[in-house]
Image (cartoon, rainbow, N blue to C red):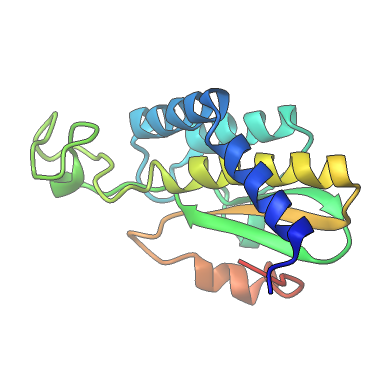
Length: 175
């Protein structure tokens, strides 16, 4: 049986995430991260932009996570459960340098870096989801911690393994 309160909270989250304001925010973040087109270990503009937006929304942002200068983690709330939202933010070289929204090889500049696997969209959409969950948690006075982490340099190294070794996920309950 479905818990009516849980169903109502899910409906509220769906309405918030689907709202025109959240849609616009998600699209703006998606386009901005795409425009930076930063290769692994050089995601500084992405870090600055998304970190700034999260700080404006009450999150604390720690940079240099796991000894990686462009890695960061944002947190809001306290206690359990800990909900982690993660997706890659780096882009690839050459073959991935595409126009926004094109699903085939059509580089803007041949051989230049660019997003072609959606790395520009995952973290922005996770931020939209986290902001909606945060609003529900505030309204309902629910305890818990929201954590947003980007996968940096995934095309070069796969930094998630470094995050695990640094203990970033040791208290996480749900990803």
